Length: 227
Image (cartoon, rainbow, N blue to C red; front, side, top):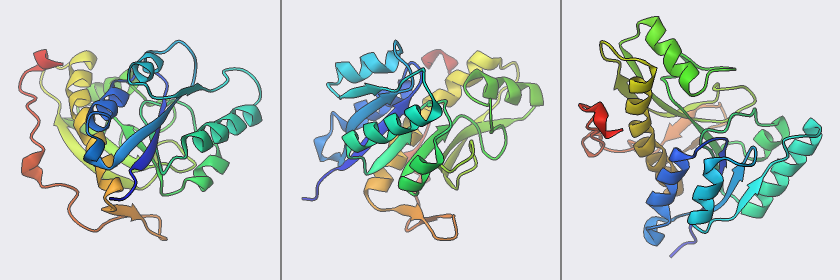
C-alpha cells in the first residue's frame, strides 16, 4: 500500500471548503490522501478552529512585515507540511513566484465561477457572485485550476456548471455554488492522488481518464434551503 498523498491547505476565511476536505479524507484513511497542514493567511479565522478540531497542525502567516518575510514564511510552512499537493481553498493572497515555481503542477485553486469569466484581481467570494448576477448570465459554476503567477489564470483542471435562477441574489447564488464546491474540490484532490491528471510541458492539464462519470456527481440544487 503506497503512502498517502500529503496535502497542505491554504485558507483565508471560515473554511467550509477546508471542512469538505477534512470530512472527506480524515474520516477515510484508505482514501490515499492526508491533510498534513493548514496554513492561514491571518490569525483569528474560522479555518484555524476547523484545523484544530480535526487535530491537523496549523500555521499562520505573518500579517505584517515585508513581502520577502511572507514569502519565506510560506516556504517554511509548506516544507513543514511535506506537501505533495497544495490546495488554495479560499486563500486570497497572490502566491509568490518562487513558491509557484517550487510547486508548479502541484498547486491548485478553487474559484466560484466558470473561468476565464469572472476571475482576476479582486474577484473572490461575494464579488464574483455579484458580478455574475449583475451580468445577467444564466450559468455560473465552479472551476479548479493549477496556480500560476497570476490570479485565476492557471490551466483549468475541472469545471462544473451551476444555474443562475430568476430572482437570484448574491447570497442565494453563492449558497448554490458553494454546495458544488464542496463536492468538486475533494473529487479533484482524490483524482490527483490517483495520478489521473497532470500539468503538461505545454502548460495544459492532461487527464488520463474522464475525471469522474457524470452520473456519480449529481447535485440536488433544486432547494436553496439546504445551504
